Image 1 (cartoon, each protein chain N blue to C red):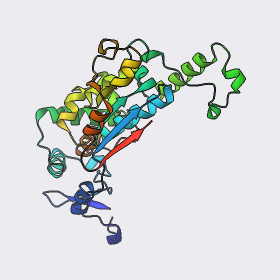
Image 2 (tube, chains in turn yellow, cyan; image 1 turned 120 degrees about the vertical axis):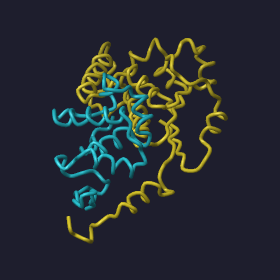
Image 3 (cartoon, rainbow over the protein chains, first blue to last red; image 1 turned 45 degrees about the vertical axis):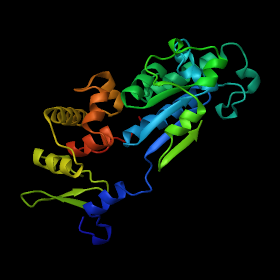
Image 4 (cartoon, helix red, strand yellow; image 1 turned 90 degrees about the horizontal axis):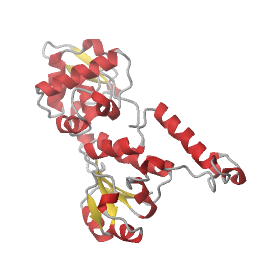
Length: 175
Length: 104
């Protein structure tokens, strides 16, 4: 406690917090809707807000499934082409295996107090995370805003998304 | 190590991020002092959150933003409005309890 070499003054703590190198805004692009990718994106967005960093998510291509009201509670983890899951590919392709693995993963997440997709979207929205749908992908999948989670902020083109990323200390992350 | 000198000249030990090391040393005056550092003016709503967090801490409940979604004294939206630079980070610091370790 009296070790002066370790002493940190309040000023230095405040300075570190306001240092120009700190991240101000995270712009996340979610292009996939396998459960693990969706959770990675949501946890990064929520984690940013919890640290006082702004966050926005751009849902594009298959990422749209994560905000499509009909599908968002039925996302799966990939059991084929996912060697890290340690399920033999031939077995992973059998009917029901993907559903079973997904159910097991959701159960594990719940044990860690990680919410399901719908509840997580509600938390993100309440936390001030702006949720954007990609216009091109919406057109491609023939979706309208009515098909989406009700609290999305709107539909954007890529150009509009980049425009929102302007300013110093903004990071763009593609998932 | 970092210390907080209270009005009655007690030096309270804190970690590098400014969290009290010993919750038993916390007083409302200490909360006020930390809130000043965080540039937060404490209102009744803030105090409700503080005592809620301290209750959770005494019960050894793990804290996450979900705790507030499921039913805390204020909604998640209000919590962000009260503590804009990291809701749980700032509120736990002012409440004198450790920063939550979880990712959510």
